[in-house]
Image 1 (cartoon, rainbow, N blue to C red):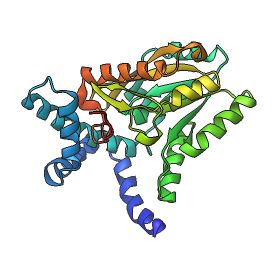
Image 2 (cartoon, rainbow, N blue to C red; image 1 turned 60 degrees about the vertical axis):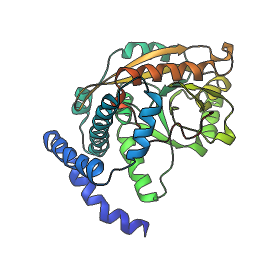
Image 3 (spheres, helix red, strand yellow; image 1 turned 180 degrees about the horizontal axis):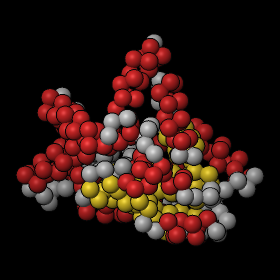
Image 4 (tube, helix red, strand yellow; image 1 turned 90 degrees about the vertical axis):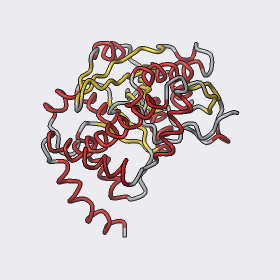
Length: 290
């Protein structure tokens, strides 16, 4: 059944991927009407999240963010599909790293790197950094149930010289690389909600106390990795900038959870600057202290 679903859906995905960008965004506008106006995909989740975290805004302002978010979300989803066929030249034009020298200087220190980022502003296209780096790039992801789509995602990432690690593969791979001195950069999108029962740390995020993913910090401490933050920004439709920010180059000397808390403050700053580009459909605040 998984294969049948794949062969039925794949031609449609491929056709979308070869659309010129003007047609891609025209199609995105149509998809947005369906997703937002017709089906109302997760509209209650999005509306509740925005109301909880941006209470200082008026109802009209929050509704405007909501509408802008759905348009961005549809763009982002189709841009992910476009990744299948986009050329390196086109990608480098549309996703620009503003200070790649900061990252390259971190490589010269001879330690692996933990890269923390948020689900914000085409975080998927950040994989293109692998065009410019020396270290092997790893992305931590949640495995897709359909093994054929899972392989497709891995194949797309390998086009950008990136290796995907499922959550189960992460620690064994990092440990093996550490023992063999194989240097890598490991991408952690750490802004989503962990299971409350497994949470080691709670902190305030957008004014609400929630459980926090601390895996990126703890692995950086355990395997002595430098830690950097990748701040993404949407410049205009289809164009993005990414900026590296040094967080800490000796994590073992930092008190536990300070790195995770610092990460949340940086994500908050992103959200407050342009909230429409955050992934509001995730139930980030489903576990919270009253």
